[in-house]
Amino acid sequence: MLVEENFDVSRFTSFKCGGKIKKVIFPESIDEFITALESEPQAGVFGNLTNTLVSSDGYNGTIILTTKMTNFHIEGTRAEAECGLKGAKLSQAAEAAGMSGIEFMIAFPGTIGGEVFMNAGAHGQCVADCFVEAKCYSRENGLVIMKKSDMDFSYRTSVCQKKDLIVLSAVFELTPASREDIKAKMDENLHFRKTHQPSLTLPNCGSVFRNPEGNSSGRLIEQAGVKGFSSGGARVWENHANFIINEGGSSTDILTVIQKMHNSVKEKFDIELRPEVRYLGDNSKEVEICKNLKII
Image 1 (cartoon, rainbow, N blue to C red):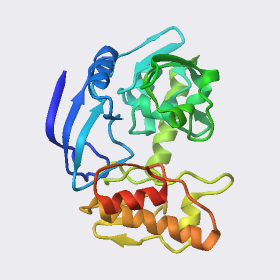
Image 2: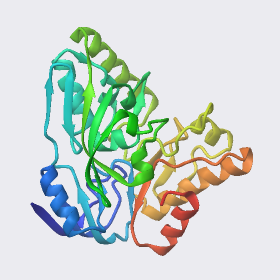
Image 3: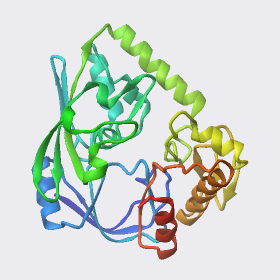
Image 4: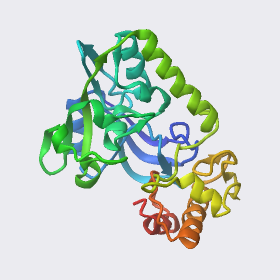
């Protein structure tokens, strides 16, 4: 399998920021993934780094990227996909097959593994609605099959986050529908993203914080007076305060902005926002900030 050393990861990350990683492994199948993780048991596992902030100083360790694990098929009402496949591609394939249920994935830049991991959703649909089962890898127990009843799905979370389970593939149960209706829903989702979220051409990781129950992180951040706050090349997006745009900023700049957003809401409303961003790096100052923010 492909192994890269001193790999410049900045072009992979959605923040377009990050230094060199000592070793990156790119498995192309579940068997290769298991082999890779067994040979490097301490390696971090990532999809396409959509919501990961990689330190500008890089990372002196090993990670596994699943971007080459992209096999999928749709048979009848069942869709099965490996973790590295982008959700948008599976959504398009389901539309072509006249199958509804994952239209929401069309507007997300992430992969199937990440979307199951966080129970992604939008516009009245989410992973939990159509999820059947997943093949997951446990560092303690090896390969396990997780049924829907095992997943403990709730808002933007699953059991995978609590038990360090790595999603390798997932099966979804879809519903037959007219391609016209499916396409209309997909177009609606894309239009919403275009009008309410930053363009993917602007380096950003999507929503920085989860919405507190019954509230909006973006509204809280704006009311705390943080919209437009900047550090270096990173700033709170002027159109929606739960997004950070990074135009040449370092990882420290981005963390400074995240910390300002979090602390301002905490001080004004006594609400602890929970970040959706993950961190990868060795910088001791950044690590300390991330621990305080519960990013790591």
